[in-house]
Length: 441
Ligand SMILES: Cc1cc2nc3c(=O)[nH]c(=O)nc-3n(C[C@H](O)[C@H](O)[C@H](O)COP(=O)(O)OP(=O)(O)OC[C@H]3O[C@@H](n4cnc5c(N)ncnc54)[C@H](O)[C@@H]3O)c2cc1C
Image (cartoon, rainbow, N blue to C red; front, side, top):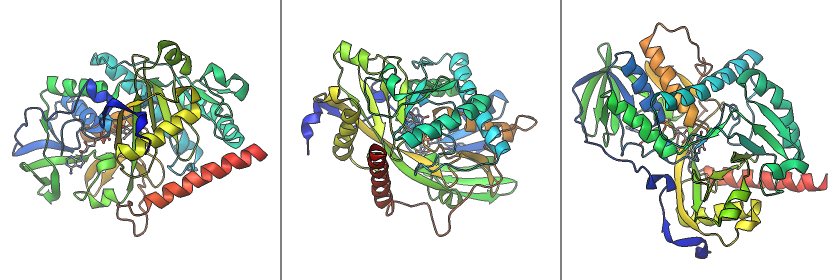
């Protein structure tokens, strides 16, 4: 194992936790009753609780671990304006009726507007930078596909998208790795753990009950509402919101089987020599690619480190496994980073859905905000708020992700781990094949 890539101060934890590390808080007692219980204390759960509190509705948030222990403090911090909607983890794109597509892209636009206004309204200091995103084309066919999408994205999601041909790619990144790509100007980046901390502070200002280390075990109908058993006590509530995304478990089996939890992995490098650091992504955008087994990357908020993520494996693996793979992916794109060491490596779960779309709605009377499909910083904040609005009622605003069908898959029970290594290997093979064919065409 090429351990030499690991810095002597290497830590197997998110780089972001240097600024905010998930905490238990004051371990608030579980109250006997509340109007609403929210299961999951990530972006979706907190944003739902904040919207409810502003409408005068008391909610209690249950988090099985520390506050922020889920994906919300672990992401790459790229904020896309809906550009990935409908693309599954296999790279397959969901075919949608024109009016459905229009609605979901409009909601993608709203999701981006919401996070921007929330950060401003709550004065969240999280290195929000609206510097755009460059999505590199893995093959000429991918470039042609991106080209066909530009008009739709601009018309419905106000994306400010345009194509960058291969000859001009070095304006976007110090590498010739892709066949050109697409820029989406209406995209941003932030420090995900500081954004989370900002939402947590906003929740605390509103005196929202936050019960950390309180895993929800069972949820059963009781009278007009629900009885919830948690690891720290029981509660009776009127409404329940499930906001557990990639960590959805056996308390909600019907939702669990509608989600495919997938691991995503990230490394942070040591500080780079200043000239090298400034040269890699000159326009300070976030970068991603069109591969099935995609990579996403950016510079750290201080511009000194590369933060490089991808599906090194589809399952949770240790940094000893993921870090060398991601380091290789990084140096494939930027050979000038060979010899640069890794100071942090971490992993977290995202949730894909069978139609590759995020969902909010009700199932069996429970509300849910689930299925980030890999991009959830803006989207899960938005779905949390939309779920709260449905509970509050009286709003005319529609949400493109409140779809009639939240599909499941025959015989699938929500535990795909036995199949994921083979699926990952197959899609890595398909990526390699497509690239080889592109070279000879
Ligand atoms: C490595 C990685 C990189 C990513 N990069 C990006 C990116 O660059 N851009 C982007 O937009 N998105 C990205 N994402 C996705 C994004 O982070 C998530 O979509 C988002 O944080 C999900 O928020 P959430 O509130 O829905 O879920 P989470 O933040 O995952 O919170 C769900 C919580 O539910 C809790 N929970 C589960 N079951 C129970 C229970 N029974 N009782 C109580 N609590 C429970 C869990 O402990 C967890 O904390 C990335 C994710 C990962 C893991």
